[in-house]
Length: 196
Image (cartoon, rainbow, N blue to C red):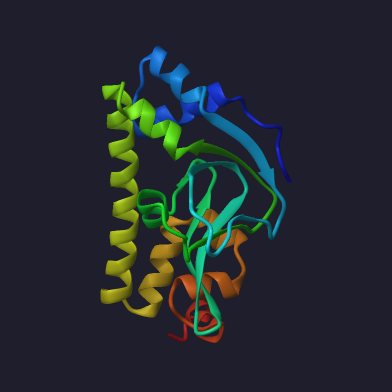
């Protein structure tokens, strides 16, 4: 169920509160480049081959980033309320992406043009610091996931997923969770049953 949309000013304040406190003038600048939107379940915010031009902030709902490999879709990340979504390689290199963004349920989101955000980075030290904190957060997410794949058992990966993404664990499908954890749906069912 989609809630009523927050204003760009409220979203700027939420981003600032989560990542780095901005002074009022910078909050206003950030709010001025935020566009609000809604996505229906199954809608793609970014499709294969498109160039990513935005950072997305999830107000309500659930998004996933995924890619295709050997005719299967593999979930890379889940993002729910309060998270930022960015396809880093496509956004920074301005190249077509292989990473898609899909709404797994009706979603209210807000997007920030990376081009306009880059302009703000040139004029504000505080927005630069906010950006640094967002990138550090995204990098840590990716590193933690890679370490989990490399060093943890299937059961430990699942328990970590439940702890770190409790909302996605409740709301995403078994197939999407299994692909995120690099296991088959059958293996995930066995892990959940305590067999693995």
